Figure (tube, rainbow, N blue to C red):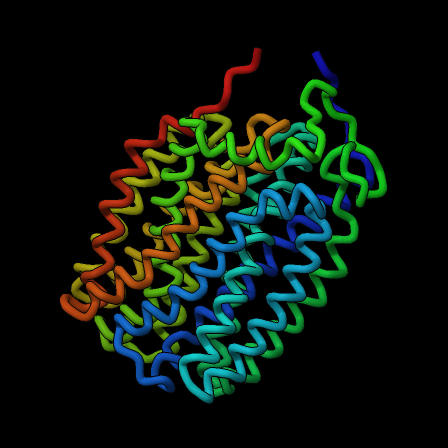
Amino acid sequence: MTAVVTAPPQVRAATRAVYLAFILMGFAGASWAARIPQVRDQLGLTPSRLGLVLLAIAAGSIVSLVLAGQIVAHFGSRRTVTAMAALLGVSLSATAVGYQFGVLPVVIGLFFYGFANGAWDVAMNVQGAIVERRLGKAIMPRFHAGYSVGTVAGALVGAAVVALDLSVTVHLLVAAILVALVVMFAVRTFVPDDATDPKENQPVPIDPAHAAPPASRLGRTLATWREPRTILIGFFVLAFAFTEGAGIDWISVAMIDGYGVDATIGTLAFAAFLAAMTIGRWFGPGWLDRYGRVPVVRALAVVSILGLALFVFGPVPAVAFLGVLLWGLGASLGFPVGMSAAADDPAHAAPRVSVVATIGYCAFLGGPPLVGFLGDHVTVLKALLAVVGLLGIAVALAGSVRPLQKH
């Protein structure tokens, strides 16, 4: 039996850096999402056209995620996050200025914003899994709670600047520059990904049987796409990603259009959704340790379905706010649990996380146009019922995230 020891300073520093990477990615995403109603109004977009514009983020993410396994394997998680933080800062700044000139600059900016998000996401999850193993305890849901903390902060700042009538351009430029600079500085304390990466400074002991030469990485990544468990986890994550993404993209618009509230209240509903997700992710490790992954994620899927029903059919905005809280709580653990399940075997963590994330991000590719198209016909509020079908799929696939048996 291995004794529990205090984590060395290098690992503690890496843990703080991973938290910052998650928090600031969330802050950037929520800063953009909080201003979607104003961008929509400036560009005169219908729900379906808005959905197509938002599709640019998912398209960039998918392209990035397909390449992310190789990018992270070659450059390491630290260098990948550094580069992607810089790209995110540039692309979000371009979007902040470009929306004043038309749809095309926004689509281009959002595509590269999505590209930055995709590789950044895989790299910080890989680093998070490494830190989790070196700490010897479950911490991945709390990293994702950090992401949610960032989204709550971004949404609250967004609500404040909307109330103060601060321009979209100024708001997003400041957010983009702040996020890029802080992350690029923080990730210098990431620990090395593995002992075979020549671009990192210090080796991490790994099982020699698990070490693969660089020439074999492409073949290993391709082989990962043929693993039934990995693919099922990917579709499980897709269902929860659709649930989470629909809330992030459409809650403000649905509250404003469906309940007739002003933009500040719509943004606060968005913040309430993110706060509920944060609570679920912070307390989630205790639930997972006590009850196990499968029962917890199934129960939370049911909670999210109940929340969606209250949000869509609530007679007054107060009931819709209650629905938002349940929806966010129920959506909280699906994505981080899927990432942990993909990284159960440290020898194959990078390619499996990349595959799972690629499949999961397809929700962001199809979700915005689907909700937008349905919104043109039945209102955005009722279109969100499409999420219920995806949550049913998540319940059915929950068994795939059961931890691997140790031999």
